Each structure stands twice: as C-alpha cells, then as structure tokens.
Length: 338
Image 1 (cartoon, rainbow, N blue to C red):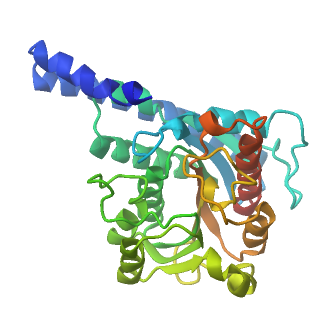
Image 2: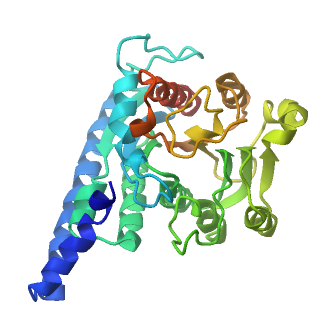
C-alpha cells in the first residue's frame, strides 16, 4: 500500500532525473487534469439532462467517488471503498427502497457520475494542492447540473475539506455541518500534513465554509482537539454524554440563515460491533439505529453529504461494513432528494 502511495513521487523523480523540462511536465499534468474534469462534466451533464427530462425533482442525489487514501495517518485502504460501496448498494440482497420510501432506481432520486481519477492524477505527479482543487471543481461540476446534489463516496476524511469548500463557494455562503465521527479531525496539521484526514475540519473552519459545526459520536479526542474545537466554536458531543444528549441530537433543526446543511459520516462513528471494517477501530460508539434516528429526524435542507473511512481491507466479516456504508448512502440519498 505504501508503494502505491509513493508511486507519484517516484514518477516525478524519474522525470527529473531524465532532465524533462518542468513546463513540459506541467503541460502533461494539465492535459490529464482537463481530461479528468471533462469526464466528470460530461457525466454530470448527461445525468442532469435525464433528471430534468423526467421532471418533478427539486433535489436529486448524485454519487461522486473520491478514492483517496494517502492522507490517512494509519492505513490507506479507504481508497478502495467507492466501488465496494456501489456493489453493496446494488447487490440484490435487499430491495432498492429506502426506509423513508424513496426508490433508488428512480434517477430523480439517485444518479452516479463516477469517480475522480485520484490515483491516475497522482501517477502524473499532481500534488495535493492541485488535487484538492480538482476535487472541488469536480463537485462544482455536479452542482452546476440542477437539481443534482453531491453525495460523495470516500476515501479518507481529507476529502471533506475540498468538497465542503466547493459546496460553500458554489452556493455563495457558509453551511451548517453535521459531522458523525469517533474523532473530531480538527488538528491544525496532523503529523505535519495540513491535508491529513485528521485535519479536514480545521481547514473547513479556517476557510469560513461552515457557520456551525456539530460533531457527534466523539470518543477519541486529545487536548488539541478540544482546544481547536473551542477556538472555532465547534459543538462537540462526546459518547460519554450521549444518553444525556440523545433527545437533542435526535431532534436537530439546522440550516436556518445559511445556504443549507452538509452531512459528513465517518463510518467509525459507529461502534465496531456494527462496522468493524474501518482503519481506526474505536469501541464505545453509536449504534446504527442511533445514526439513522439522527439522520431521519434531522430538519434541514441537505445540500451535500459524504460517507468516508470505510476500509474494505479490514471488512473481513462477509462484507458487513460495506453493507453498512451502503445503507448510510441509501438513507442519505433519501434525505437529500426531494
């Protein structure tokens, strides 16, 4: 896995050793970037045209995969999650109707624009600054095709920063964020990496992309996590007080006075009894029904969402966590689409 993560660096070193001019390398990278964005743009156009032709949809969920894992601090397996989640959504072991009665086979409810080709971009030497820009632009391309709204399949949690940035910039103002996670992911720069999956919400709050950030399910938090939370005015709801907070969290009303609500679900918000296939196994988490109660009862205009940190390489119990991630996607689809 480490060898895969370092492939882009090795590629650049080889080009430098061969004395390839920098401007030539950049031109090649730009061609790959343009091709990647064109692919997302054309897919989004096709799906947007279909949904508009069918009519009746005010908002429609559109899957966008971001198979990025190299900003993980422990394991890079989440890069392999998007295809496994899609497979679980449509594997036929359950029907395609959500608990709230939405039919996933209706394109007005759910479409799919494919994946941002993260590894191909990194193979060409595209660095993280450019990669984050490409992710943001890909999300904006989806949002340009009304009524599509992005439902993003991670990937590690570093993807939430460029996705939320894109949603906020495209809508023209900050959003409220409901963040379900075992960890606050708000380090200033974890292990020196400003794009670490443990730092995504620091970047979001610094950028002014969120007015209100509620973090639910927290049970692994350091002093820096608490200090950063206070610095940015984050509402952190730890599992040790969940029984006291339950009634409030299961009756949330968010988004008044801002451009909408974004939901970010790290699969490790769940107790590992429900979702063992994650990189960071942290006992004492939410039950799956706890999460669904929070999502189903939330009063909000949900403008985007992500499901992140599912690690297929640790999903050793008959694909159980893949089905959990798929169910989260299905129910988020119902929350977004209308």
